[in-house]
Length: 365
Image (cartoon, rainbow, N blue to C red; front, side, top):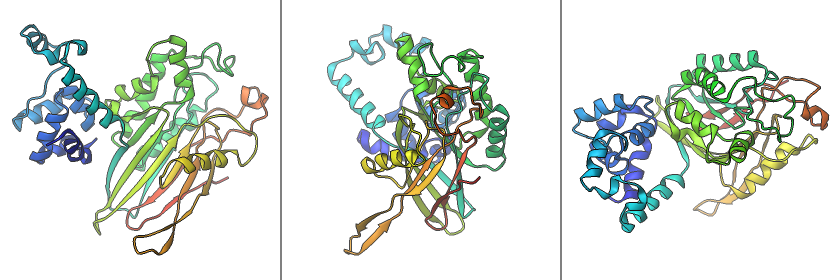
């Protein structure tokens, strides 16, 4: 089985915990493609790799421990070239490694859902800006509670932390009141109960400023995904997510492709969010598009014509959704001084049909 074949075999089991171990072929493919215990556990959604290890051992599957463990050090001392630093590997193994990693990276996120309901709700969170005082924490905590109580799925669209620097726009009133590690702890406290119903955790421009300020490859969004126990949740500013939904009573299957982009630029006009979403829809093929950054909700359609295999002209419906923020509605902030339109707090719900194909959202006042 080639690396590409193994990836296709194990992909349906991403974030499904131990379900893969009932499939002997997929289990062997997992061991072949992700031989390191921590990597395999992250792929399956385990926050504790030891839990996965116990199940795997019962099936006769032995995954390699962390490269810093005593076992790995022992193998390094006895000349296994693939367990040392990558610069010491044979060149053909370096080639295989980078080919495998590029195939993994160049893929959409995938979420698999089985439901008895006719629709699945996704709660779109974005621009939480956790850290400073200018955030509606009451609204935010209530939103997390409702998502959990309703068993809704969700995704996080970037700027989850307000990692401003002294050179950032609005830095004066948006400095941290909590240190970065405690902001991450607070987000984990809120988000952990939502696992495994989180599709992805996106990186926004505020997270990216930390990289530029520190001059190191550190991402608070990636760190948040790791703290949640699954670094596969991390999305680097933009990307695709495929939502696979099975309607249990009828065994009907639907697949919806989402393209998410944190957003860019500013704008004062009512149509600015939809105009930017239309730009994304022109360059990326998906069923629905989501974007944050502008702190204003909007929704619209971007339908297009196509011909099916029989030559019949049909319409493909596409949904555009701009997400909200959780900043307080204050006058004395950088958005107010710049004349931007008011922030709309809260999540934006998106419903995807399970029994029949449909997409809808709700923008209410």
